[in-house]
Length: 57
Image (tube, rainbow, N blue to C red; front, side, top):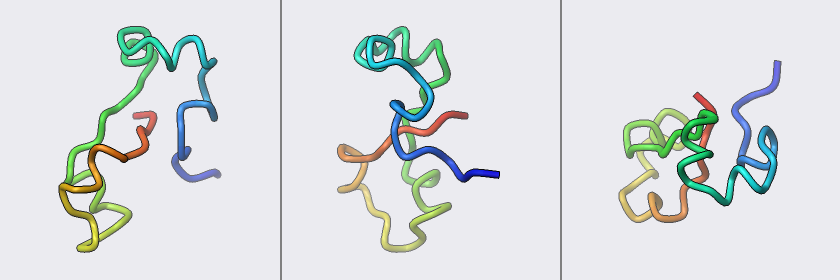
């Protein structure tokens, strides 16, 4: 089984991903710092959130 995708292009059309409302309806998750720490551990800090990739729930 594959891990979590790194970006929305792995599972949704670009037209959906460029529309925030449609992307959220399709399953886009905007990660929190706690979510980031699941994979990135202690090196994850709030400065990464603006650059964070989104993950499918």
